[in-house]
Length: 100
Ligand code: SF4
Image 1: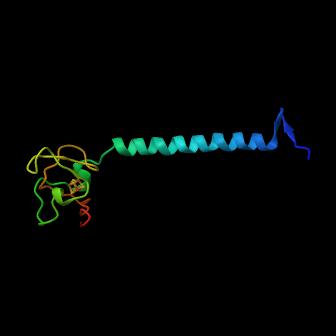
Image 2 (image 1 turned 45 degrees about the horizontal axis):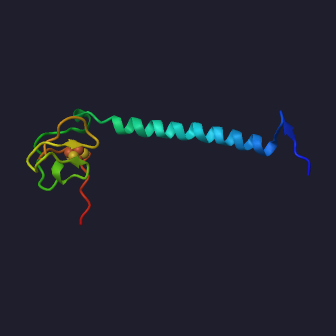
């Protein structure tokens, strides 16, 4: 079976290269977005963060996004919110830790 030639390339090879190039650009875009998301956190004011939560069981140290400090009493950080986070703080992005 004869294959159509495009500048010395078969149509199949030309399509494979074109698809590979498009896929590479798409993946680079996704990777760039993920890196941006990992580096960009929300401002405390955007999520109404407070250093002392009012509802028991809904403090930052009860939240799946909280990254504890050295001890349970130390301030930590948050995967979503910028800056130092009080373990007894709270914000509207509170996400309960999964039950074990
Ligand atoms: S998402 Fe909000 S409640 Fe959860 S740890 Fe971060 S600041 Fe605290």
